[in-house]
Picture (cartoon, rainbow, N blue to C red):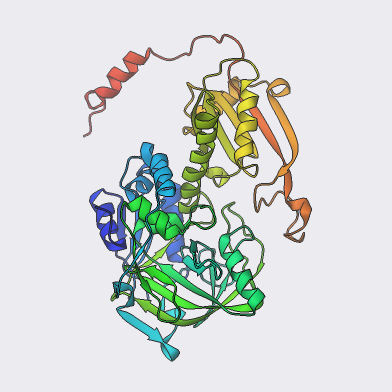
Length: 472
């Protein structure tokens, strides 16, 4: 059975040992971000838990993050599958979506705040980059809009800056589908209906942060992931449909043909991003469950929840093209979190002939040419998810004059601060193109034997480790 809501999923995380509950008092204006950052930097990815803060000073609402992408194991648990089956789960969801089903009422509307009772400051929205962020902002909003011509909804995750008790600044990237919706309403001179959803069952959240073909309702894709439809209710302000079991829903409209400055905020590169001219949302109502839970993402500096989520989806697309479409002998594809799941791409393969390594590189860049500013290809005996092994291959299987090549004038890694000085306008075309470096770290000739004990000896010792490494 799929998870019915965030609360049921949190119980599953707790039972799996993947949720750390922090009950001591914490300050949302600095402490939540700092605790999260120390946890993500200190705990190895495979053991990294989601974090839940139950005692936020000045608020009765708990804060939780890491529940979708605290680690690859958490991501797989969110989809109720094994990490090796995640790619197939996504393929099935997008080829066989299940449309949402409208119900008369849902827990997300147990409490209704309107008029003077609308106050976004009552939500425990953390400050993530203290001293740099101009205001708190929502890092995990699932923003729902609708195409006014087709009536098909879209759901995406866009940063939402807190601008007042009933006002948000919402930055929607130029390639996002919600921007198409807003521009259609702008052409009519009409406000755009919008709903910001916070805290849902995990399939809804993962659908929101993933790229879909235009016209595919992400709530239908979430239904495909769940294996049954998402129950939705109609908003009280307009007729947008939102998940019935959501924790919090913020209803309102984008002002027609009006933009305001928003940001800058910390970005996935680990640096502050640029300011943007963003949509203005007037909040008309806030509805929520009794005793709601506030869900966020830990983003900004990698490793982060957002970089983990992005890496899984992007790796799947590249692997499918290399192996499924081109039948190349690729073993694994990995976008390192240190590169924000964008700048540093590593591929392992069983090389069959000279020139095949470069063929793999060019094919990988063709999937999304903004990715892989540095692309390293290694032999299949190297685990690309082990930074030590990857650096060992770089150290001793590469001759720089022979094995490194550079291609110019490809699309740049988005928001790469090495592109230009901060004062250069973000839309300057010079910031849209960059160079890519390919490094062939495969063996080009017969190498000496590896200086390690035989594999069977190592495996025997590992299997009996407690015999050697007795604890006091």
